[in-house]
Length: 208
Image 1: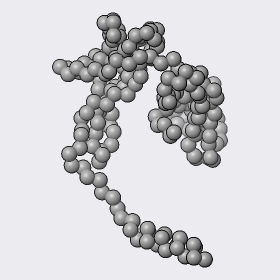
Image 2 (image 1 turned 90 degrees about the vertical axis):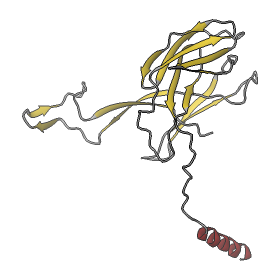
Image 3 (image 1 turned 135 degrees about the horizontal axis):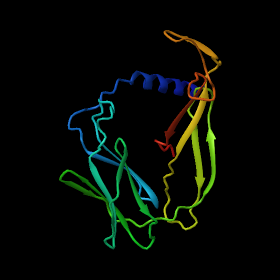
Image 4 (image 1 turned 45 degrees about the vertical axis):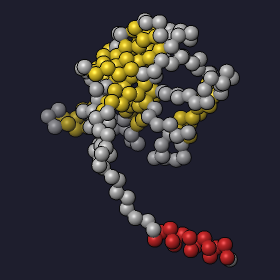
């Protein structure tokens, strides 16, 4: 009984101390270059954008689309065939990385030049298993990856993925009335249907 009474008292005190948090928006670092990507063998994808204030929402105008990117190794070889594939997304075909060399990323925006440190490529360990978790209908789907590094190169690895998925409506609509066209029949084998839909996405956050 004493433990229960103490627990209730603590909860009441904690509840009474809850107040709305107002972040301090002064002296925020806005407009900083945000670089997201990893130099990998084959196709390297780098995403560029600008930081925004905490009170603002990302609108798309923050993407950087006027940059020139290149990958350089410590032997002076520069690969500068970057192409803008999407808003703020650049692709560089670097070929096969040499594990005996070090590489860095060069970014040029107008008269500003940004360079990363030289880093050695890592031999990525094989994936042990891939699974998924979903608690219930309407809940998010989590992709889980397990692996281990027998060479003990690094305690952390970042895995990314792209997904394509299909979903459908609860009921099938074989036809519909469209003003000016009358009754229109739907063909489920083409995109002219209201039953099947498709979408795509990519990994964005790491839980643990």
